[in-house]
Image (cartoon, rainbow, N blue to C red; front, side, top):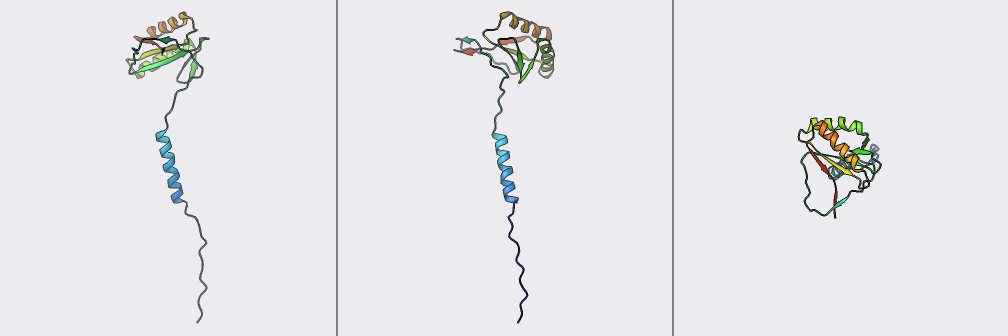
Length: 133
């Protein structure tokens, strides 16, 4: 009796479960990651001893370096561009509060200028950022 030669299948690796696991890991890391806004320059805030800190629901923070450079949301801009940026933020949130985080070595006049620009745009709540002792 003569048998037909049997054909052997070439062993292969099924990639489907591996791809499923990779997508699950990718989804897990995407959902569990927290993003942090890091400023483009370092600002040394003045210290206060008061434990009463105000926090607004819709606030926009502008950081001012010792040299007078302005930064918000990881973008640097000039004083002239501040009014446009504030108007844009004010369109999104009508009750916007401006938080100015100015370096402790900065001239007081620069902070007053920023507060004046905010008032001209229509922002009624301006706060000064500080760190607690």
